[in-house]
Image 1 (cartoon, rainbow, N blue to C red):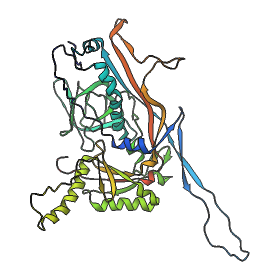
Image 2 (cartoon, rainbow, N blue to C red; image 1 turned 180 degrees about the vertical axis):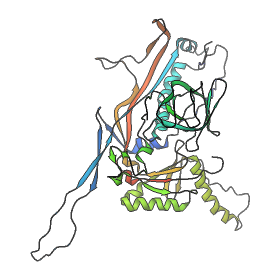
Image 3 (cartoon, rainbow, N blue to C red; image 1 turned 90 degrees about the vertical axis):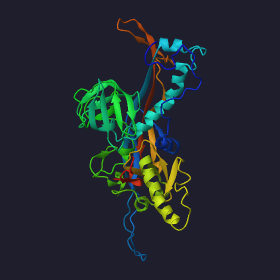
Image 4 (cartoon, rainbow, N blue to C red; image 1 turned 120 degrees about the vertical axis):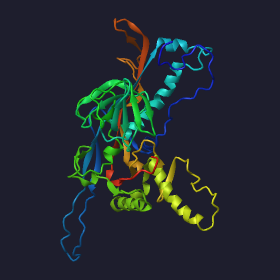
Length: 423
């Protein structure tokens, strides 16, 4: 029997087969896909115009034949968007396909299961990569150890393993992102969400304690990735966003609330006031993204109030946790906050979803070889070392798009947040 096979068994097996993989919980991209704009683009850059000055000169005048004075017109600028080519490839051996074709032998077909899970799996990766800053970095290490033929990394508390996937092939870079240490040859054999560790399928040459883990396929210094949430929601006052210098155009710098010391209700109030002060009623459309850690911090604020109530005579066996604990969102300061499993642990992002959108060269679809015809083949034979066909088949998905925010100044980042115990 071949190795690394799925449901490939010739003996009697149980009908219920639990999967040891996490299911999608795509809070951020769900919001943008439903409420944001989708713009079809070509191979050239896409321009996202915005107003900087509405226009008009206000003042007084002499109604008794006085000079009315000059006027002024609107002024604006534009941000630059593009697309990022992403793919998800599969390979199945002929043995896998044949051994699972008959339901009397195998409960499920490898081909059918793979095809069914392909798009949801790609969407899972897409949401993970949306939580990025324009680079290909998915995780940052704080320690490295070499086991028996494997590298084990301990990752930082900001993301841990959030943006990684078991079985994912990765490219490991040094901390400065100047050189790749291991390119597209190693994959994640195990990850531990609590200990924040990943085990790779081999040893990373020249591994360091602070290496960075990037997705497969990138090369060269400073590898690029999706222009995601942390690219557009940048509090930096230097550098560029969407091709504009932040020093020349401060309106592309997001509002910022420093919450060092831990989340309090006052931080949410300040965040709302800063957005309203800068963008008026746009602040009323804001929603937020918070990690499990900051969900716990918000609940801790509620527990303090409930403890005071309990001290006034409420029975001690009262469940102090709120009844809506398992809902996908909660309110904090009247703002709906979506629990986002891929969100950074040390920040909460607040924004109106309508200012976000996607620039798309092509829809997500299975890769096709179509030359001069409407549709081409989707499944491709593999080749062996001799040049003859190999007993396997290849197919893949492509997604050529990226994200943009047309109004970064309407967002607020609450950062510097501490993690509750256990997170």
